[in-house]
Length: 162
Image 1 (cartoon, rainbow, N blue to C red):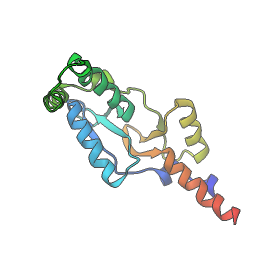
Image 2: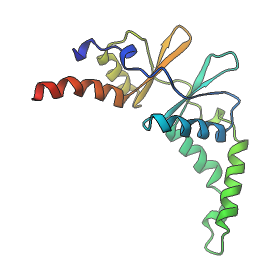
Image 3: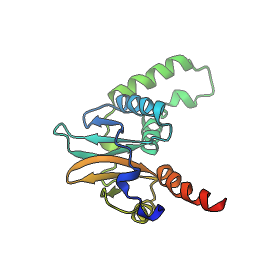
């Protein structure tokens, strides 16, 4: 049963997206909103104004962006008195002005809707990512996370273990 599963069967067809002109702050907001319903959601699809895939931003890229731009302020490392509320406000302001280009994953792992589960696992292992986009022609159909594959695999395994 498990080996019959395809990317289409496991993908999430609702996933966070932003346009390529979005700010870092907007991307963070969109990711947080997606995590309300899907806590393991960890990638935002970035599209051009024409709706084509430009790339993705994942949690690690967001952490990198925040560290490089927001947490670089020397005042945060100072030993003396620091107004943390003001520093946080400054950091939030910086986020509203940062663009995504520098942090964009332009070659995300890709799957076809009919790729079997073993191909999905292979893509995860080769890309060293725990998610992949399901594409048909030029359209992003959905996202498959390693947790989705795990859920499918163990559903059948647990029945055999009984």
